[in-house]
Each structure stands twice: as structure tokens, then as C-alpha cells.
Amino acid sequence: MRKTLTLLLLQFVTLASMAQSSLIYNIQGYTLAGDELIKFNAIQFTNDKIDRVFSQTETLPSNKNITMIDGNGKTLLPGLIDAHGHVLNYGLSLLRVDLTNIASEKAAIVRIKNYLKNNKSLNWIQGRGWNQVQWSSKEFPSHKSLDSEFADVPVWLKRVDGHAGWANSKAMALAGIDAKTQSPSGGQIIKDRNGNPTGIFIDNAMDLIEKSIPKLTIEEQKTILIKAMNSLASLGLTSVHDAGINKDNIQAYKELTQNNQMPIRINAMLYVPSIGWLETLNKGTFVSKDSMFALNSIKIQADGALGSRGASLINNYSDKDNHKGLLLHDQSVMKDYIQTAMTAGFQVNIHAIGDNANNLVLNQYQQLINQTKTQALRHRIEHAQVLKLTDIPRFSDLNIIASMQATHATSDKNMAQDRLGEQRILGAYAWRKLLNEGVIIAAGSDFPVESANPFYGLHASVTRQDHLNQPEGGWFADEKMSRLEAFKSFTYSAAYAGHQEQLLGSLTKGKKADFILLDNNYFMMPKNEIWQNKVLSTWVNGKNVYNRIAE
Image (cartoon, rainbow, N blue to C red; front, side):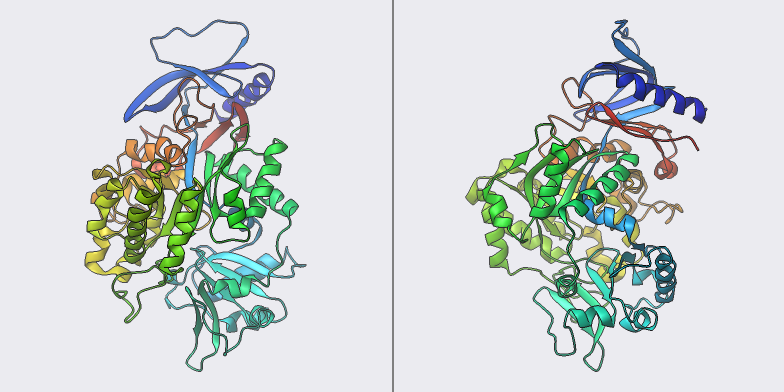
């Protein structure tokens, strides 16, 4: 069966390249019309746009100029959209040492040594993915273990959430960091009882190390971005909101667009503050002629992450006395950033994880949206992870989109209640409470913090379980989404959150021909198996950008 399907798909690629109009029939197709699920068994598109979809009762055209392709009964969905990912970092993660799911600090050293066997000429060892919460010690690692094996080369390893980094002594020496170095505002250098840096840097303190790492050239960025986007296409993503890029990244994307090298769509958020950010804002929003690259929003970080205790909480962490996390900007500075972007006509998307950060952002929005009259810009809170229960209705009152990542809940379930306690956890990862208030949830993954596979997010949304079906019944199961709600969050709602619902998010006449063909039917397969679904082919702008070879 797999070989037959692969041959059909390869035939599809060949024929579609010879004809302007194509029709895929014999499919289990699904799309949305508002909150209604529409089923169809054929779809016709010409060049980059959809002509129509056909129900079971409708007669298919017999025009000889239309390329007819048998979909072999497989499932066809609109291309999935990740509303919050980090494309360049994802590409780098494919090239650097992967420390995800390691069981200990010692295991990290072994993983790095194995990585170096095939990467012997590195000037810096870089990696990402460690998570001390998964270790029996639950403690942050130290530079000492790195120094014992990698004394002569600088090492910099980011935590899984990207809000903490682990450096060796060589890296700290290059950065000029010693016992006298003070933690910057919005960051923390963790030190031992003698006042010496342990090698762990939290949030803004990470910049102290990263300023010493050689910057990527535009050409290097383009190579990495292409690798990342091709990988994302293989997972069924046809569009990604790139959550925080700088002017060099923008230039790289524009050059890729000009040379028709973009396999998927990118809706970019300018990181504020970054070098030249104000100059970029003053140039205004941008959309490429083929709609493959758009820049109409900014990204600001209000606080850190829960796992590294950098998320800003109203009250102390339940598992750490006298600690409430970190705010990364003074509120007057934050106000200036937001107001400047809104006045320039940019959507504002603010990372806020802790309940204090979310409350402060909502307060800023309440004042500045009215002042700038920018309700129509659909401002967002990225993550909206821990909320005061009384703040939840404010999202709908202020027309704020909650850009959330379902797999954060299933990844954090082992530590979140320890951090927050029994009461605050009720406002955390609160999808159902938000949906019940009429809030739009745009789904994403925050890759490479989490897997970029959108079916992991769909699975987590409807089960609140990990891949071992734990916990039984789901973690705080009352917050689950329905399959339809989860589907909408990865399609129409994500498109809406990027001001692109007229182009993307559903399969209707005149919209872009962005769709995916799947091995299993998302709406019919067992819920606990959703994460295992496989993408057979991915189409963007009516072009096949990924085709799975049969195993």
C-alpha cells in the first residue's frame, strides 16, 4: 500500500508541474466554515489558489486540461500553522548537540562527546535541550563537569526553554565573567556559596556569554533557514509565526523570498529591543508579492520561563522562598516599546508566562490600545501560561489573542504544580476557561523548546496527556479542547492571529492552495494515537514542497 501511494504521489508531482489546474479526488477532506466542520472528497486548485472543494454528491469536472489525481482514500487537511516558533534556532538545533531527554548532568557530557566525534573542528560547542527538572538531582548543572572534559574550547548549552544557559570556564573567561561580575537587570548569574559563577545564566544574563559567540553571516542564516523550513514542511506545517527575529534575519528571509527559495510561509515578529529595531519599525510593515514572507508584528519578552523560575509571579514560588521570578523590562520602558510599535501600525505580541507578567501586560494593553486606537491590530499575549482567574475575562474584553502551546502543559505537568501550588495552578494552561470566555487561542509549539510536530500539539490539546497516556484521564482534564477546537487553533485561528485568515486557515475558493495529505484521519483515529499521525505530502502555493518516501 505504501509503495503504491508513493508512486501516486510522485506521479502527482510530475503531472502537477506540467499543468496549471489540478484536482485531487478520493480523499477524506476536512475544512472549516466558522465553527462548522466541512467534509469533502475532492479539491481543485489552479496555480496557487483553490478553485473549489467537492462533496460526495457533486459531479467532478471532466476537463482534459485538469490533472486528475487519486488520493487513495487518505485524509486531506488545510496546511497547519504554528503561531509561535523560532525558525533559525530550530535550524541550529538540527546542527548542534541535542540535549533533550537526557537523564543527568553526566549523561549530557556523554552526549556532547559523541557529538564531537563527527564535529571535531568547532570553535564553540553549542547545544540545547537540557532540563534539570528531569534529573534525579533537580539541580542546575555546573561548569565543573564541562571543564573536566572540554577545558580548551568554549561551551554554551541552552536549557530546553531557552531561558537559561550552561557555560564552561573557557566561555566565561572569553566573556570576561568572574566573581565580581554583577547580574544584569532582568537576569541572574547563579553563584556558589563563595560567590563564584556556577556556569548557569538566567534570561538577560545569557547575553553576557552570547555576545562573545561569532555572529552568523546572512548566507549562513539562509542555509540554516532553508534546512529548518524543509524540516517543518515534513511535519505538516505550511506556515509559521517566527517569534522574535532581528533585521539580519529579515534580510535573509527577503533574499530567500526574492529567489523563490521559501518552502513554507513565514509571518515574522520583529524582536524588540534588537539592533536597529526602531529603524525597521519606521520602514513599516511588509508582505512579499507571493505572500510567503510577512512582517507586521513585534515580539517583546515580559518575563522568563517557569522551569528556570524566571516567570514573574505575583507571590513567591511555592517551591522557593523569597523568589518571584524576573521581569525583563522596567514598566516605563515596556510602555514605550508597546506604544511605539502600536503607533507604527504593528501588532504587539508579548511573551508573558507568570501571573504577574500577564497581569502587567494586560494593564499596559488596557491603557495603550485605547490610547492608540489599535483594537483592530489583534494584539497578542504569547504563552499566557499562568493567569489570575480574574484576568481571564480581560482577554476577550480587550480583544487579546492567547497564543498558546499545548505541549507546554504536558511537558510542564511534572513541575508546574510544585512551582505554583494548588490554587495558582487552576489558572495555568487554562484553555477551556479562555475558550469559555470567547477568547481566540492560536496554537503553536515554541519549537525548538518543544517538538515542532503539530500532531504532538493536537494530541496534547485533546487529551492533556503525554505519549504514554499519562496521567490517566488527562492532567487537569477539565481544560481539554475538543478535536474541532484544537484543529481550529492550528488552522483558522492561527491564520487570524497573523491577519492572514483571508489567505490561509481553511480550504475555500480563492484562498491559497496550502494543504497536507495524511496517513490517518485526525477526526476518526483514537485520540491517544493522534501524535503518531504521519504527513505524506505537503503543498504550499499549489506546489509540492514535501513528499514522504515509503518506509
